Image (cartoon, rainbow, N blue to C red; front, side):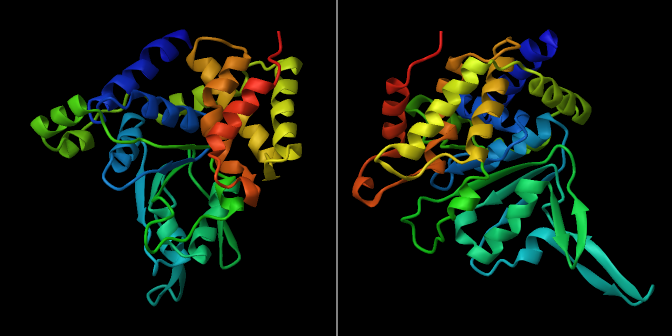
Length: 310
């Protein structure tokens, strides 16, 4: 376990950093979401490396990769698949859609209509899809990376709260530094090299690590700290909707993974604080009179006001 943590995780970050210069933090956060058995939402402008990150993650784990390019005319069956009548055998045959991959990039999710967005809900929550009354299990591991354009862009459909809550974390990659961008310009496209990446961990090792992370210990004191945070978002004047139970579970899952990445088999409050900006803001709704405030700033103030358990 020590060997896997210290060497393999670091190796994955180092390898992917060759394709996403200066974005080690975004890579690490993506790995935390992946090993926590959750899904990741990346909100950013086009062309900042979201596709590169998705393909890279699939390659370093030797997993199947699927991509869904969202447009306003995308249908739910374009995601899940559909049954087609086969004359030769005289019956319908199911043809799986791109959702039946281990790592699925849902590009520009908020360009799809609400009906099509909802086709992802069962897949994300239950790791299965139901088509024409038949339920199909999705592969393990199963990880969705959805990208979202800023909502003010033309032709977007904001994700409803129920869908936002299903994303374990929401992050932004952001523009590279000047020096990193210069390196990119000098080196040119590395997409071909990305597709040739050799796996660093295989599927069985990934599933093993995910199971190990679930065993990480979290004390009653730390659980009470999480509940204090949740109660604050549910009762304070700023919020019209606070953290759901799914939200508190997300905090627990990511805190365990953060502890594991830091060579601990127990969670400390810092594991929660380190990831709070990525696990909480997209789940809360500010009241209309406070909409001019940044959710991240409200959460930051929240954390500063809640006593940290000894």
